[in-house]
Image 1 (cartoon, helix red, strand yellow):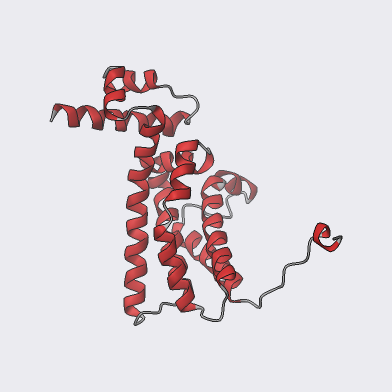
Image 2: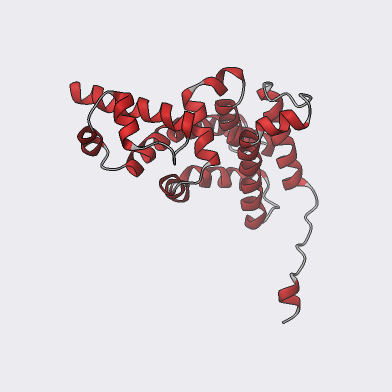
Length: 220
């Protein structure tokens, strides 16, 4: 039990510090001082700073992805195996936006940690994002069933753009609030979700435009 308590204390301290100061400015010595443990405890439980960051990110990501897949499954079951594209996209981006936006979530350590993870590109998180894509494949499958006339390329781009809009909105929420002089209410999370879903849906269902041939290709 003492070992579990030490591990939990390290994780909690690391998450607080990373959320407040970012990944680059926090050292292992900062973390052990915050947690009230010694450096050997970090090495014993995690092995390195990268492994500690990875553990935190995976823990938070698992919760978000579980919620995504739960919403997706419910939507497809309700639709007899085929859900409307806007409902699929809402299941994809909704949990992420709800987890990071809004007055209560923005103050939580978990939300601020995930915002840091979205803003700061650090190797352990990049590796996890590039490796853990099975849940996204389930969304691709659902999108194919919803839009059978769309090519796989269109589906992949559509999913990518939906995720990009959600993450950019989270990263740049403060700037958008200032730019719009408060007219864009980032605290109205359901409105934010609806706007992202609306634009992503239009991109996938509008008439497809053929990409222009680049000047390099045309010159060959």
